[in-house]
Length: 362
Image (cartoon, rainbow, N blue to C red):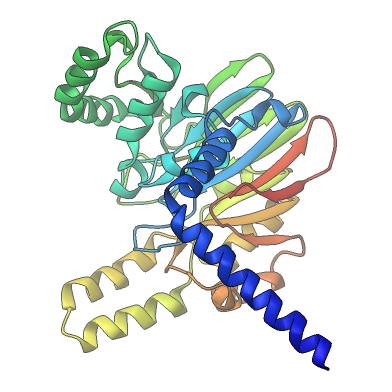
């Protein structure tokens, strides 16, 4: 017992001495730690470490409500060594940096529709892609009719900033021709004459846009990516509509937006109780142009997809303990794996296989 006390006293003393040394040399220790962090983080790029195939990274899984655990809507898709991004919600560009997905490698960005929470992160995407890649041409930004108007608006808002950066860093470092983005609009067929249009078909990768129903927001689309025998479908915002199940037929992964009415109604009741009638009215309105988790599960079952992932989570779910309340009875409608999407998740689909690997990047 006496020996144990001596050892304990010695350990406490050693700990105090180490703490004192850290305090005295805090500047040097902090500098050394930051050097290690910089060495590990600067220039990080996970893409070369991934096998050939399709890979889906969730860079933003939030809806329009504040949630400290989630950035705005954003999904990165890696096909071989090519990087694409669907939607650009606030904070998602930073998440891509944390995840080791360099914005300088983004080949194109695709927008599902023009609600503010899906486009309010466009500025950082355009700026960082320009600076990181020393780009000489603007970032291609695909979307349904009207996307050029959105992109031109962002360019106008940032035009002074672009000028500052060229002036400060030089044309060699920030070529003025590479600033901003270029809207690449496409048109869907007229209603009743088809619901899809091929946006890109190149080097084995096919990206197909399909009509969804987010009325009164029009146009609104989802995207299907096909590459090396693997497929991923991202719905964007939509209410229950048969076009999703058709577009997602036999896909490996369906990434579907989801709103749980029972939980949204709790928010609405609180807003009413606190005399915030305008926002309570909004809570009622949003119920009619989104999909419940159960309806999304039924879509996954109808399409016979392998894995269902929820994103654009409404209402916010900062605690995993609340996930079952959000998912509700979805398992009654789809027997496959169901994942509540979280920022930093990566799903890998190696070429010409049935494997779906999942890991965290942040």
